Image (cartoon, rainbow, N blue to C red; front, side, top):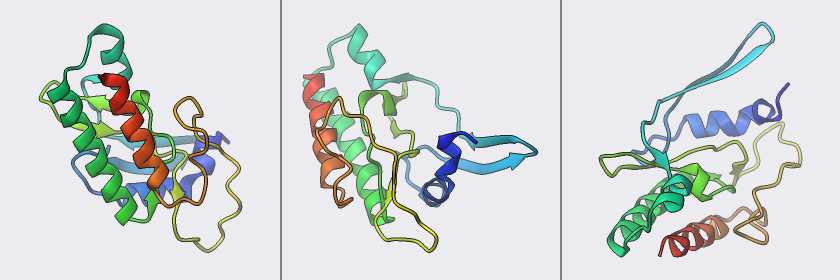
Length: 151
């Protein structure tokens, strides 16, 4: 089984999130030996793709950072710390809406029945240790670091 699907408890928690800046996950399931996630299709480009093709101006940087912060705030209020915020996990739609993607490494801030220790670790390129206590401050730090990369 793919490690991504092994975190189905975290994914199901992400499924419960309902916020305009968070990707909507419609279903997580399995059919025979095939595991799947059905999520909304988001037409646009990732923040990484945008950064590779153009300089992002100050107004756009603030707009993106504000929307990412709103998504992280909603996730944190829902008991989830993303733990893998990076430009590849931020999608930019043509209409200006920003979506945070990929809650596969998310950490629940309250231990759920049956949880085991979390052996997966987040991307290290933007932060020394985002896995820490799971209090959400590190997600916000990385979001700020990503916004700084835009300028």
